[in-house]
Image 1 (cartoon, one colour):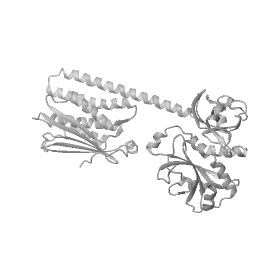
Image 2 (cartoon, one colour; image 1 turned 180 degrees about the vertical axis):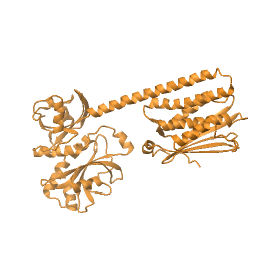
Image 3 (cartoon, helix red, strand yellow; image 1 turned 90 degrees about the vertical axis):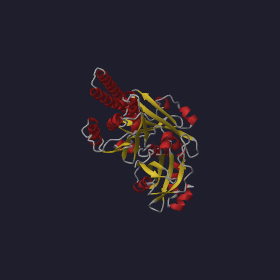
Image 4 (tube, helix red, strand yellow; image 1 turned 180 degrees about the horizontal axis):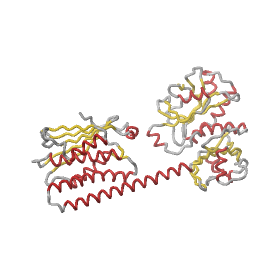
Amino acid sequence: MIEELCRKYNDLTEGDMAKLRSVAENLEMIADCMGADIFIDCPTRDADAAIVVAHAKPKALGSIYEEIVVGKLAYRSNEPAVLRTLDVGLPTSDMMAMTQENNSVRQNVSPIRNDEDRIIGVLISETDITDHVKTKNNISVLSRTTEQLMEALLTSREKDHNLPYHDSDGIVMFNHVGVSTYVNPVAETIYRKLGYIDKLEGNPFSNMVLDQVSFSDILEKRQLSHNEVKVGSLVLNIKYAVMKNRDFNVSGVVMLIRDETDAKAKEKELILKSVAIREIHHRVKNNLQTIASLLRLQSRRVDNVSARTAFSESISRVLSIAATHEILAQNGVDDVDLTTMLQRIKSSTVDHSMVGGKQIQISIEGDSFPCNSDTATSIALVVNEVIQNSLKHAFKGREKGLISVQICRSSSFGNIVITDDGVGFDGREDRSGTLGTRIVESIVKDKLHGVLTTETGPSGTRVLVDFPLDEATLQGNIERPMGPEIK
């Protein structure tokens, strides 16, 4: 198939096609090792297109392709990394592309050169970047292994071991009897850190293995073996792959080593920081609840109705902030789900602020999306103030009522609409001087950078808060489902 396609689309020589065949013989092993679809593409007479001459699918993780795409063209507009490497002869890593089956992928591309150092094709690894395949393939993959493994396999046949230096992955090659024949500089650095003094090439596998795997086990399984081990002070990610010659007989084993010590240290540091943040939020929440309890005790000693009302309003504000910190303490991150937070405020309001003897229902509906802690605290105070105001003024002379909180989001803005079916208030009445009104107006303008709109009438009052979403929400949740549009 390689010869047929090359004769049709380009002018490669018999020697060039033989080189491509030697790479293609190991595509399945590379695909299993990488956990990705692996291709060989060759140039065509069209400067903006390449032809797929070989394709191997990973067995363990499954392919992102429904069909084998050998014989199909890869165009520059869809796969820029492929044409870029063919043009300039340099590897291209982690570049987005669109496949022949219209899937979004990321490609790592390495050049394939003939004996005259001319580019005759490229070796490509592709990983799907859609959410469901990300979840399915949620494993640690050694980056840039495609280029290194291809070079190692070709070099092992030529036996000159002229591999270039790579700054991330170590490569150790063993022959069919388990004697090391090549150790690249990265692997040598790792072994020196572990105290190895002697020359590494020529050592048996039993002297160089860093986990509990035996050479015979690797040869018998003839498939990818992947382990994470701690050796001394180092955390290493190790992979093994069996090499085969052109007659499909075992010719040796490749060991790939990634030093993940620094990455694991940073991961541990992040975990410790997350635990510390959760503990801080937990303590803040407890302190706020303590303050609310003290205020409640003090209010019971006050006979003045106005003073007791002021105490109650202050308690409600403190508890609304405490609700935000309670969620942050549970999550350990700086994001709060808006709907979850408002449900907590609703529960707090029902427990502590409902007007005695009246049946007032509070409903919270709409979109669910996260926002940072500052935004969440501001929204909590605004919603709490508006609900408290409705409970205090909207249902005078009524035994029943409904307060509705509707949350919506667009591509760049969030909307919160709070409505009640109360008696409304006289538009001529000046409420701008009340503390609650000043708090709401100040927070919406200065903290949320939003717009506050209030409408009222005999059938009730409607308060709309329109605010821009923070950058993290825009980047992480742009595809969340929309709620009903508010008119």
